[in-house]
Image 1 (cartoon, rainbow, N blue to C red):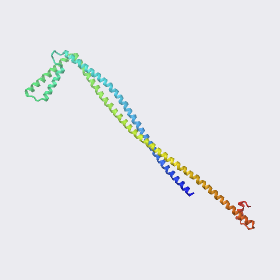
Image 2 (tube, helix red, strand yellow):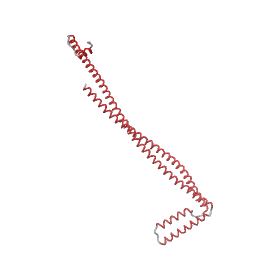
Image 3 (cartoon, helix red, strand yellow):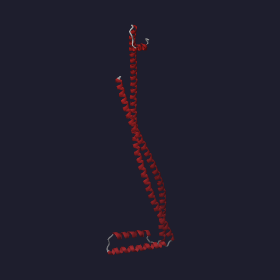
Length: 285
């Protein structure tokens, strides 16, 4: 009996050990689930933010395309007006005279030469005179052109077209820069989401791993509990048999004692009150 009770105690201790391990693992399982869910929530948040930046980027890129179309339209008009103005000035200019544009280019070349080249005094005076004469000639040509209303109107239109083209170009650059910032932020958030998703996947793997271990500890706990119950049944059965055997032994001993007292009674021996009670209990009286 003592050996069985020792074995039962061993099984109960093993069951308790595996129960504690199971509960610890279940606590860790909950921690991994919470971490996984927290990371997945962060992934969803980053993706929502990234998609918001993507929408802004796409809208800005659409505005960039529209503004580029306007810029190209103004640049085309600038080119057309410039060509028209050059042609008109050629028509109004006296025969054999260099175009104003070429005179201005020649003036810039002479001024650069004067600033960058060391010349003898006489050559320098000659160059300064050339610059002065050419400057006066250009001013005279410009003044002459101003007399023609058609040229003045074209120059005004050209100036307005250039201003609009420049404004459109600045707007294109501004919108493109904003679109790039939205694009960069979108990529950063998608990258963060990917990293967080990997962490969430790792947490899911840990959750599964810990859950399987917890299930195994639970299985072992149940297995040992069943062993304890089996020992309980065996020990209980043995205890019942012992109690029954003792009862039968006690009853047999009582019957023998009663028989001996009854024999003494029949022999005429005087019985005590206790003896009479034993005989009465055994059915002799």
